[in-house]
Image (cartoon, rainbow, N blue to C red; front, top):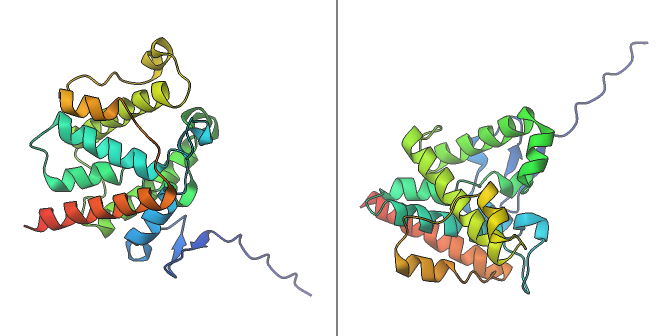
Length: 207
């Protein structure tokens, strides 16, 4: 009697929208804004090791990064602001691994994130791979946001944060005043803010 082949392990996740997202071969058709916002608002930055009554969510971090990118490039088209907003979108599925752990996991994890991000981009009308100048801008804004979060909420000293992240240079005083006081939002508030900003950028890009 020929032994039955063992079924491959499940590689998809069911979303609250009813979509079933294949993590190894994600389809843009299975990606929904509501699922992304719901997930990112419930994923904690810094593994939850932050001060305050609420965790700092990836959704709120994403809003910070989009704000910083827009400050660095005041003429930034709305589609690239949208790219900044969704730069961590894969984390609604895979969570927010801290950078040291990503390095330990290795290349396969990064490839998985990249495939998911490409699917998100295509779903919302962005190129699968961003232009290098935009990718560089988003990474710079991301590291600036990390510096502000690290020193305000995650217990980093200024000198320690300077070693790993990017000082928020090139921002206007108004933006700096807002960023000097990051207050983690409740989950539902972060989720709503993320959806509202996404829809603003989509609507503006169409006009």
